[in-house]
Length: 276
Length: 190
Image 1 (tube, each protein chain N blue to C red):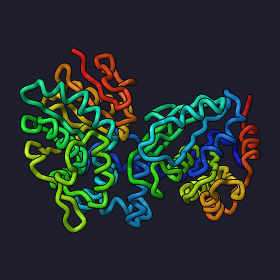
Image 2 (spheres, each protein chain N blue to C red; image 1 turned 120 degrees about the horizontal axis):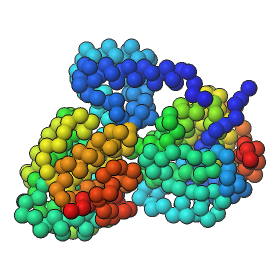
Image 3 (cartoon, rainbow over the protein chains, first blue to last red; image 1 turned 135 degrees about the horizontal axis):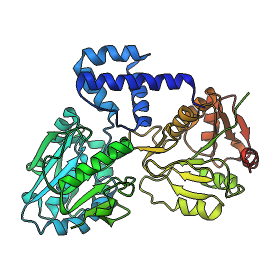
């Protein structure tokens, strides 16, 4: 049986979620709780906060503190070419079909600090599509959007990214895409010349355009089932007929109401195509 | 009085696959508890572990999907590159946040989450491995009144993980694999 102290902590977080919505307008009520509880506990531990009251004081008096909290509680861990087989499949199965459009629109939903965005842009560049593609990169968090725009990643990650790039079918020298400086790798800003960075909250905002491809990888796992369904419907509204949807390796359309209207183009890599 | 566990969580790393097989191969296909197995794996390794456990045990084995319900008699494997959490409605929640103890999946993360949901009704088992992941999770289970078992270090292929767990939780029970299997069989209700 769950311990009463744990139940009490969870109850306090529920109250906090309501207060955050009232105070800042961010709605976490549809988020998967196991992760929220863990992230809040973890954040409190890192900041040396011993109880909920100690968290609430700075949280509601200091919007900068809240931004830090927001970035930490909404997981922003990402990497370039995560699951190389996904990007390889995108290159082989999706981009050739997208190339038939005169102008391509892509939505990178929950782009976080931009690693996935730059991976995608590199792919498009190598397939000769980048110049006629517009990417909308959105995230709930303004701070990570600013980071995404910069395209500066720790140089310590470069060996792993290089290996992943080649595993994803990379055709060039990976080192040609960035310059190293003071422990950082700054990626060529030409790659994101046609990218619009835009704050968007999947939990509350609506569809804002039509896309040929939507990427939303490892975002839905942080949502409860209802919110997942809302977001998938939002994607459905935002995809052209025959458009593509790419999810994370452990996310699926299978349990969703939109599933009958989609084909799995690549089941293992969770790439779906909207039917005509 | 300790309550009977309703969930078994097992963690291991190097040597953990063989040790887990030793324990699990003796369990009946209708085993009355769900079992969650967290093994450190190579990052992008694809799932043949599922086949191995499916073939060498009598339990139905699956790699965990997000939001999947925990059902008795199933063996659930943590997928590579995700942490495995549990929700209060006894479903799984996957998480791709920071590595813990250089690992994702991390044994600590799953053990801690299991104890948050099941309270004192969790049995946590630490097997062979070359890392100290799992030791604070096992301690957490023990402190909440759950059952803490550790494979006897002399018997483990690599004793780092069992030794770390024993250090963190001196009150744990140190057992040979055959006795851990006996213990799990004693939890089985026909």
